Image (tube, rainbow, N blue to C red):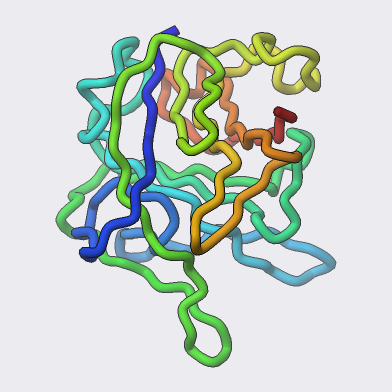
Length: 208
């Protein structure tokens, strides 16, 4: 399977607007609305997980499954950490195909004006010819990996395309743990991926 490994690395320098990155703050377009979920009539913001500049990975996309231009944004409910694909509000993937140079960093702050984001990490890329990866210190964008490679799945995921796999990881600044050192996977229907329609993306946490 042709896959792209995304390796997050802390940088001492502030990343330029439009960079591919893990955590930090998203670089967004004018009129952007932060994805949220509704619980008991209240809206709660999803956590910004990463943004991927499609031009950065175009040369690595051997199967031509992803857009060649624009930016992909991944959001997830990192507070409650849902793990079943039946939770349609658990995650959101947004796609912007406009001028990258017009984007501006958006900070999500609390009632005191303090930044809520975690420290940003730049992303480096390489191709790997595999499905599930055992490197526990990396984040991976996996393309062309059928869900059944991972054992028994919920029916809603059967036949769907894995779009992004985020491994559990630990740094000096944070701990990210999915189902006991497992992974968080974003899935999309293959036909919608071909149409670059990211309106219905589901997640699943998979045990290690």
